[in-house]
Length: 232
Image (cartoon, rainbow, N blue to C red; front, side):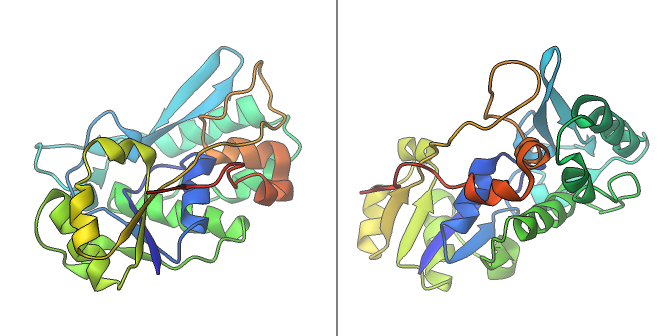
């Protein structure tokens, strides 16, 4: 049983969906601390002037606040603004309608938390990409402990035999803990084919909807890394 665990992000890049497709169970790790200025409530799109952020305003009150407790701020019409920018910068893409169909209710969205909004969009996009991996919430597993210990507890509750991690986690994961509990550790490879884009040189570090707007159904064959994941 290969399990992956990542925080939810707002319309994330294609590597996020490759990660989901690479495991047997995917866990949204959303009952942990919310981090400001991160991918939780924003992502990038391409424009004639370079990349720009699309940001969902949230109500952030204290550093102990969890991702699943972070409310979306609906006091401004950010959904309408987002859709307007999509129309301005992607209206000429060949599969613009496919991308917009995945955001069809963004203007009227009323999900209480950024986690709920992110997960709704991620599930919808995964369906478009024919990704059928079961996705669950970490809060439903009631994991205990902290740092690697909490992660190990979560994995054991899922009977995981392998944990797939992002490569940056190598700096802080307690590898001996995985060995003691008989869980193999692997790092995801993020190595992708470029695809046709508007607005200058190729930039792969943008939302997956850039890929879908430009490539449509062909996106399904462009989300898998060209190189294998690293097994320790």
